[in-house]
Amino acid sequence: MEMFNLNTKLIQLHSNTKRGASMFLLDVNHPEIMNFINAKTDFDKGYNNLRYANISMVINNKFMDKVYSDEEWDTIDPSMKTANASLLPSELTFKYK
Image (cartoon, one colour):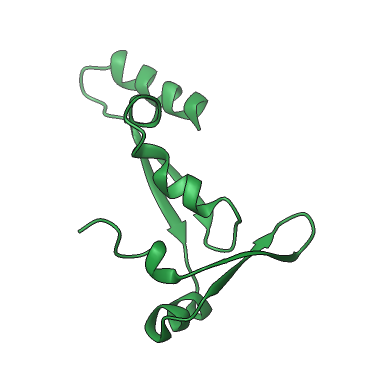
C-alpha cells in the first residue's frame, strides 16, 4: 500500500492542479481486516505512509445481518477457504464517529 501511496504523492507533487488519492479496498472476510482498518491510526508509520489513501472495507448482506443481530463474524483464510477467526461486527463498524 505504501508504494501506491507514494505514486499518488508524486502525481500531486508534479502538478499544480491535480490532487491524487488512492482507494484501498479489502473484503470484510479477510483475516487481516482489523490491521487494514487500523493502518492509518499508527501515526508514526501508517498515517505518514498512507496520507493520500482512502481505506474502505467491502461488505456484504451477510455481514450486515451480523451487524444488526450483533453476532460474531468469521473471517476466512483466502488460501485455505476456511474460517480463520471470529470477531464482533461492532469491532469493525462504527469505530470512528
